[in-house]
Image (cartoon, rainbow, N blue to C red; front, top):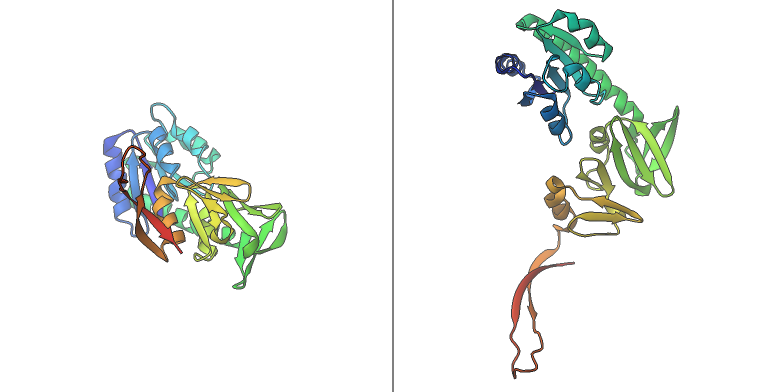
Length: 264
């Protein structure tokens, strides 16, 4: 499980970090001294579990916990026992009083791991891959048969995804990461934090955007290299183009050398 630590006290962060590093299931992505900094990080990174202090300058832990996706689990760590009731109002997995005891930490993490597994199982039930050229998607208490070739792209919106088809949209409750794991990688490509596209349905693209019918989808900076490698890696040759501008005042033309790419 990918986790982060959010606490304004350096000593507390080091203590939790030490306990995290002793657990082989946990993978510490980073530590933060404020909810604001953690929020910026979580906009572009997948986080499964947050060890979160409650009383911090600026945005409190309770406020921050209420703003993150429900699929991201929270374990509160604080020195104030009077916040315990508030912690359960935002569906926290556990409430640990600092200094955190190793045994209580382990029990809280075991509970988080079990709940995380349940969330993943529930997500997989929302979308079933039949192994053929179609999938079944659960939406509005029904299962819809969706042919892979009809999917233009998949858009992630917090705890939901939207499958955009030709003239139809299907919304189901699951994460974009789970959808990506179920779709065949040779046909679908993630091009930014919120979109997976059907590479066979891409009509055109430039350095910044992919165009599918009337939809314009931005290519994320961290996904751009992979996008071009996947779409144009095969059959790519580097060529040199000679541009010969016409100069009427001269008897000869001065060749200008530049580089480009040719594709076939």
